[in-house]
Image 1 (spheres, rainbow, N blue to C red):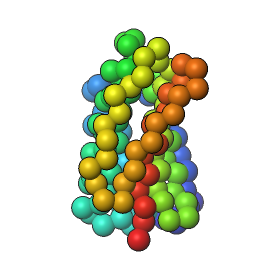
Image 2 (image 1 turned 120 degrees about the horizontal axis):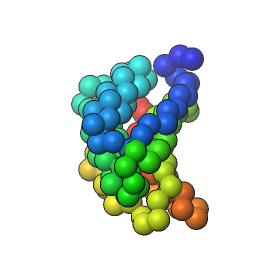
Image 3 (image 1 turned 45 degrees about the horizontal axis):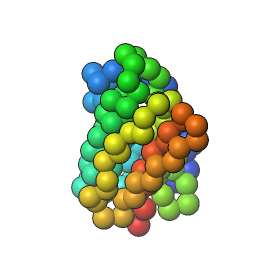
Image 4 (image 1 turned 30 degrees about the vertical axis):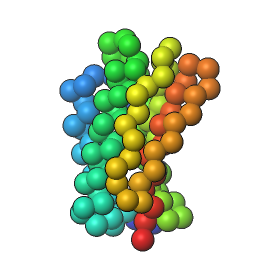
Length: 118
């Protein structure tokens, strides 16, 4: 594992008290990938908002939410996945170079937040 290529994931209970921890992990991953502070902060804010949206969409106390961080070939992508009957209200991207894409397969919903790297 090095700043140009890494991957790690976690599964957490859907508890809004953990959103700050996920935000901090996103900030740490962005800093490790050597994103400038402004870009890292924007990514961390986006990941926190999407994590909160996933928790709300789960509709069940402590339903599992999976978070995966992948740094490869010019991008840092954070995927947030959950099983939910209803679609999550994923927040749109407001940052330059940051894209948000959602997909659904059955009850499995995934949001991919991708930051292009300079």
